Length: 149
Image: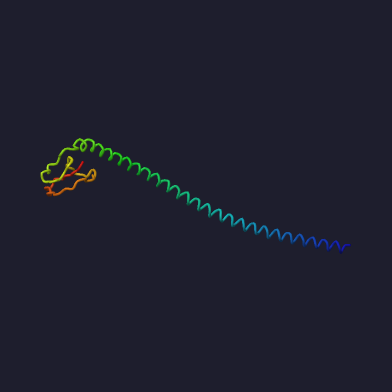
């Protein structure tokens, strides 16, 4: 009976040792996995930090772009207001009248009244409905714009 107990005790001891080895293996594998997970978390944290910086930069650039676009919009709106005001003040009242000093240098065939306006800057391009048969070149310094209405 003693021998049986001794054999039984030895068998139990071997079972305990094998169980401890399996548990040690599992603990080592879990610890290794834990190290890998921590490494991946650190990498992802670094990427998130980098992306946060990029997002902040993009937001700043977007705000600058919006401010610049708004300035351009305001500038273009004011220029358009000046242009419309000029057309309403200067061009529209003269519509149908001959205004240029160089009119005697131009020979034209016309049915409708012709408007000739001296301008430093081209304001608008009009569609020509009649052909000019002959044009004498104007003198230097005289700019004429012929508009057929």
